[in-house]
Image (cartoon, rainbow, N blue to C red; front, side):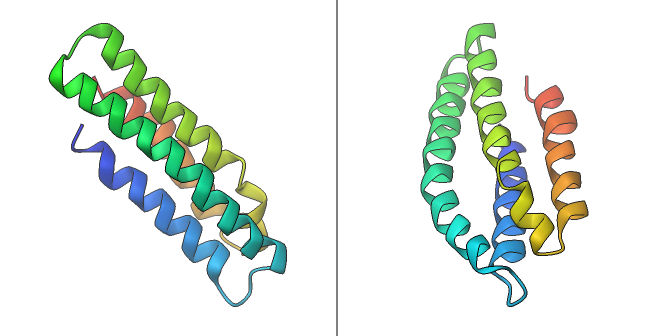
Length: 108
């Protein structure tokens, strides 16, 4: 579980950097505001599922933890256009792919 937290925040930092820069389109700045509110719900779900799995490392809790992380990844995918507009699409896609492959396969 400890390994997943840095990966989550790397994605958030990448998004904020990509969409908060001077070259970002105006609608991208609006998306970052919406992203922050939706993102907080997803992170809370990850924290809750991770805590449950930490307290009881059962298969069902592991799957719930993976599902919460997958939901977060799905939210990240919704903001790919913003990363593209900011010129950070390659980094964005690399981060998403690392979540999908490395994080989910190595959690539990």
